Length: 217
Image 1: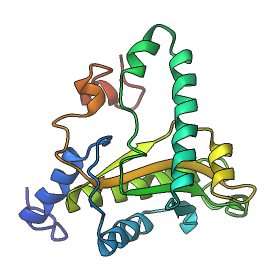
Image 2: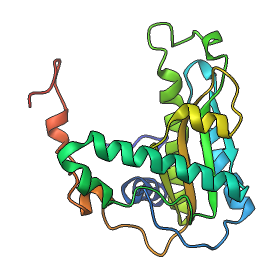
Image 3: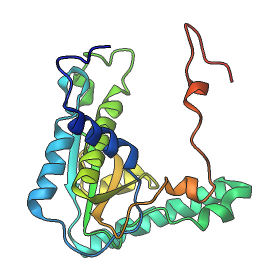
Image 4: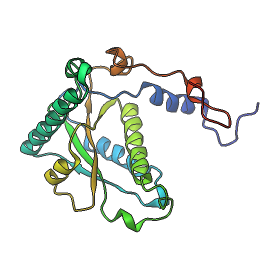
């Protein structure tokens, strides 16, 4: 089969797939600072994500003040304990996992959905959560760009959105969706950390694909 005339070169294509397959949700970071120009490139990558109706719902807040970083770590710890309790029999196993790198990472960012999202109807009339899907694409762009730059990124979702929103003085109607830990790492995990820790495993792709109807289990 002839390759599309719009395809990347073999080298460029391989680099894209390498970033996808080697991306990891990182929890361990070195203290070395991230170059400002590099950080800007990551944000630009995020900002070039697709968004429903071109609404660009993402907002980024850099956490620089030590007291705010410490408070954010406290809020995540509160939810970590609550999650362990909700997991029941697996709670002890969960507590043994490292689930964030908030205190160690040199770059700490909060990502939120902007307020006044109700004004955007295009593509959201029956699927209002497409704003979250759009912002998730932005985070994935940043994740892949970070991997290409040799930087680790960890997406933390263990927190009360309202409490983190208050911490960053977010407006009414906005919604915090992610705490992003970014920085240099000693090495990338050879496999997803939760897979290495036997928390879960990647499903076989064929088990997730159906032809004209829901895939069989």
